[in-house]
Image (cartoon, rainbow, N blue to C red; front, side, top):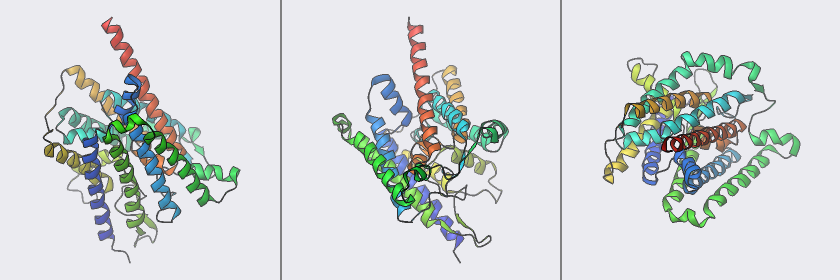
Length: 372
């Protein structure tokens, strides 16, 4: 009989530890997915984008090696089910992309900035978390479920929505072999694109960011999928202990932010407990804070105007709604979900990039008109 309490505690504390590592190095290397897109769109600089792509490549390779060796089962995640809610991926992704541009950063960057003393990020965190909560369980959930995830716009796939499962029938290769082959091809291509570039090495932080962030995602899958995976003594069904979904999870920030606010709101309710996702949220903030204090870069920052505050609040709400609707953010879908080779994760990530790019171009044109 598994010791459920011990397993859960191990998973939660491990999540906190990985969160600290993530926050520390995200602050140190200035890792920011919104910034990566902005660098490419506005300056043609691919440094941080290559770091993001490298992280995706490392996450894909490590995650699928774990799956190939039987350490984890990637069909037991929220990303790989047979319900392909394409409209939710697109709309949610677009909203998140617009939102993170208006809010000056995605979910993980918000937590990193909170740890660094940014009061604007605190406001974004609260509004993003509340919007995510009402999208999960409140008034926004009505629109999400009844419109964006309605049966009429949901494709019921004959198999799991990962590329290996979808391609197996046409290729005729054993699933496990096809999975590891695709993972190697895609990950090597992404990593090579990142590192086989002279300008990429001009800033070593980009390499460190890609290596650490990608590695943390792989470690997260191992912790929830191997250490935390056990038989429930009450139902005799296998599940992931310590996670909100009871499925395998790794790094993600939008829904966990909502669960964090729920925990604070219902602190005396014994049914609300610290989970893997909540521990990560705390860990990232504390990790960023530790780096800021150690390097004496901690400083208070605030809004410069009411318009600036309004812009960030709108962005935060769009991120909360979009992140839950798309089932992840630039990390939750853009690295963690992507590492499962899920078609939905790929679609959501592309939608996020499109939404952010369109907003940045619009903002640039608006500035040019005002300047003229």
